[in-house]
Image: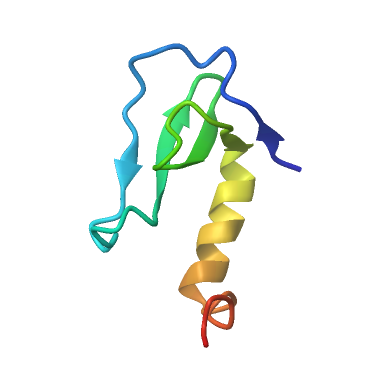
Length: 76
């Protein structure tokens, strides 16, 4: 289960936003975190909570995205 919180992250992390993000700011950012974790945060709340994933969890999520397993979410 992912951890949550931005405490202890410090500065100097390189957060990446998708090139497909809309200019309205509705997007998430991803960064490599200390301790071999991956962080995900809301780009509109850079000081807010950060979801933390292990590399295995992150790879499982990306595999699901590539396989279209989440395509039904957010569709109208």
